[in-house]
Image (cartoon, rainbow, N blue to C red; front, side, top):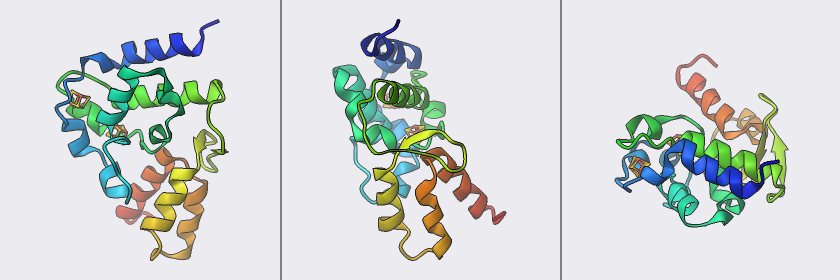
Length: 156
Ligand code: SF4
Ligand code: SF4
């Protein structure tokens, strides 16, 4: 059976993380900068990649739970690093290794996610939105992004 350390090594390899040259292009296009009032370099794709390369404790870091899996940073990366694939893999390892608490299951897609960043997002950023925005508390970051894309396109 593959253990957490092996899986982390595989995540580093398959995402191409070690090729990162810290150019920051992924950070420049990452939508989290707009979405989160508490956006920081630690939660940015570059920050998560750096932490992944320097320590095994990245799976315990709450910063891996903000990403919307949009793939924008992956598309922009000159080194072919996939921030999306890396963060997906880190989340899977964190859940399977049971290193995070307060896990919720998305009411839309059913996937597990950490709820604390969702609360930050809703209450800090969307205080003035219509009441139905509170439904977003039950959505994972990926579904939240999709819902907002639909809202922006005035489909909802
Ligand atoms: S765009 Fe690629 S090389 Fe540049 S910081 Fe992001 S992951 Fe690293
Ligand atoms: S996949 Fe995640 S980390 Fe990468 S650009 Fe999109 S939101 Fe940012």
